[in-house]
Amino acid sequence: MTNPVIPTIRPARPEDVPAVVAMVHELAEYERAPDQCHLTTEQLTSALFGTAPALFGHVAVDEHDQPIGFALWFLNFSTWAGVHGIYLEDLYVRPTARGTGAGRLLLATLADICVRRGYRRLEWWMIDWNPAAGFYASIGAEQMSEWVPYRLSGDALRDLAGQAAAAGTRTDDRPGRVPDRGDEA
Image 1 (tube, one colour):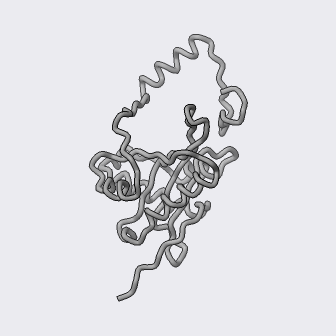
Image 2 (tube, rainbow, N blue to C red; image 1 turned 135 degrees about the vertical axis):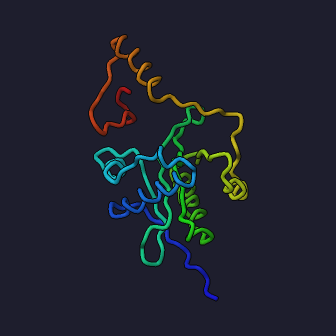
Image 3 (spheres, rainbow, N blue to C red; image 1 turned 90 degrees about the horizontal axis):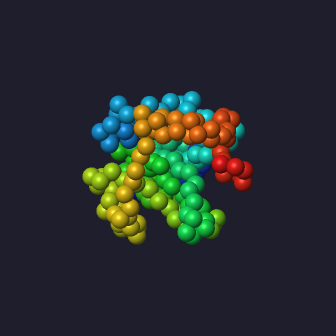
């Protein structure tokens, strides 16, 4: 019996994007919402490798350098702690690669980035029926049950945005602009 090859974790490259997009769609299928996933290769390429990327990614690769899992993340900021943190948008490992340590290594890589950069938190949401809850607890992750997520989208988002326009609020519509570089938000 041979031991499974331990995956390698590295930053995502442009050539990884099609595989990551395919895995995002696999994740949507797993989470019983394939009709809600519309991510394209072009969108993810722009988000990760455009002129002002605000999304970052790492991939777990097999011995042939083929992606078998991914973590897509971005920076958040704690006003109470006064420092950035990482928000993990999605973590996924293909079923054939589960049990290889890929998920743990992806999370460990993000934890290492947090520690090296002085960030205080690595946070994510998980669908309530996901069996990964036991794994997350085993690495010391705490469920944040006192915080309730909110979302504004669709017509409600457009209606509220209309109030800013009606009030004459100035916005900056430059593509790719990330309002976290010390300029006005």
